[in-house]
Image (cartoon, rainbow, N blue to C red; front, side):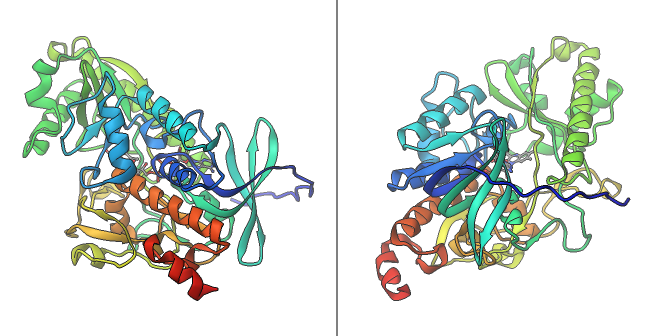
Length: 434
Ligand SMILES: Cc1cc2nc3c(=O)[nH]c(=O)nc-3n(C[C@H](O)[C@H](O)[C@H](O)COP(=O)(O)OP(=O)(O)OC[C@H]3O[C@@H](n4cnc5c(N)ncnc54)[C@H](O)[C@@H]3O)c2cc1C
């Protein structure tokens, strides 16, 4: 298909903020980056395209945190805050489910307490470069096109929108099948179920019973007349009579194609509705099942992996790599959801067995632009490494490290790659760099 193009007229754009640190994307990584930078004394603003902070936790309804248990710092603090809320699941489990509304509000409060400026409903669309540096970020919103300037920028958009707009190199999808990436899923909250009645046979989270309970769930959905696009449809208990359902896969949809994301959203929401209707038609424990909400933002597992100063690899995971500049230790397995339905619709590690490994700060520092960091799922890694570090316990820890480094670099008048990590050594390193 040929695309007609037009030349957009050049125009003058107002600079709405000049700050030390600009965080683009307010998901788990972005919120953590902004709070950490704010607490470190930097002036900081976070720009978020949705109407709330939290990303996959809130707009995505996926209020289930993995790989958080070994984390200290902000992740532990968020866990503590959320566990103290009236609607929390049992604390101390390997995974933690949070209430979506409470999460939105808690993150807003934490940003406010840290002095972080928050701009919602605003999307990063372009970058103005000056040599090897980002000079300004351009956004689109109800206020039109605006420019934002900072000493250091952090890309926490998940899909690497900021870095790509700045001209950074990136990888996407499988190395052995160009363009094939992990599928999207439309997360849904469902109610009208009795946890005592369905708990044993259908709920995920019971040690050693994952295959059995997802088979049971799939069989019941199929018996209602719908063959789910995900071979392991899963039901998780959030609290009381609220459950989280992940039952579909949208294949061959690219997270940075607005057409693909739109089509996947429509198809995913349609399938979720049909699955709930199919279950209800079975009666019994499903008699009163109801759809409480589908996510405003479909869950995107994989976007751009921006080239950094180190690319974390499957080999690093297998050998349980240790790095002097570690930001966090990831302990989650390699979790690849099928990238091609003709080869199966389930998930697995594809033979890559990870041991606990470090994520190095160099994977968070862009190599093609000097004043840019990344945090969350868009950092520098290969297909299999990404399939492990992408979960939110790690995204928060990465965001926290990136925010601290950005604040330090801005104050020192350095670029992130000129500072050493951990920051205890930074004063010495800064002297050397100057
Ligand atoms: C279906 C699914 C199930 C998953 N299951 C789990 C699970 O059970 N537990 C777990 O811990 N992890 C899970 N993950 C992985 C995890 O959710 C992500 O990898 C995680 O969201 C990474 O955090 P992030 O902050 O990098 O990205 P995101 O959560 O995607 O946040 C990115 C933020 O940036 C905003 N944004 C994007 N583009 C722009 C732009 N151009 N301008 C401004 N703002 C922008 C978005 O609105 C969003 O708020 C799952 C992922 C999916 C998709």
